[in-house]
Image 1 (cartoon, one colour):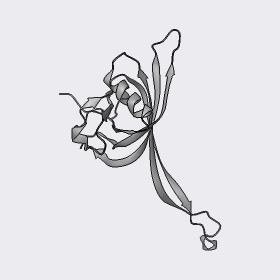
Image 2: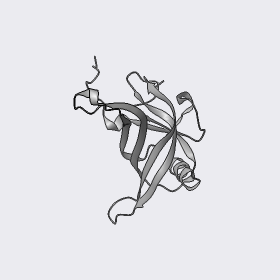
Image 3: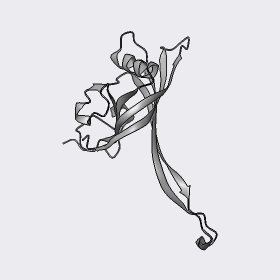
Image 4: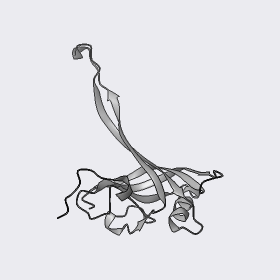
Amino acid sequence: MATTPDFMLGIDAKLYYNATLGAALTTFTLTLDRVQDVSLKISTSDADITTRANSGWKAIAPTLKEAEVSFGLVAKAGDAGLIALRTAWLANSAIGLAVLTGAKATTGVEGPVGDWSITEFSRDETLTEAIKYNVTAKLTTYKAWAIDGV
């Protein structure tokens, strides 16, 4: 009988996209399959709430969260995902993305779902490699944190 591994692999992660803004994860059916090395950066800004009563220690309070996803996308003429990302970038509009640790509706899968603005859409044309787009997207509208792909 197969056992569940104690780890997750990056190759099993999924990056879903949807042209409909504000969409629920259940409507995300398209994946960006040609991506490489996805990196999701999530952080929280903080406010300085230090007072003299804090015995010389700085005190902070968490404020706003932010998320950024960056990845390489191997170019292929006519690729629907590439076209959707390029269209969003050219129009300065958002695109729905779900950055998940695996296929949606799978136990243990999680990640942010929302509308993201494309802030980088650069292209590498290395002589000995495939043409690759370097894409960065920043979360503009948070929809949900998917847990177990829901």
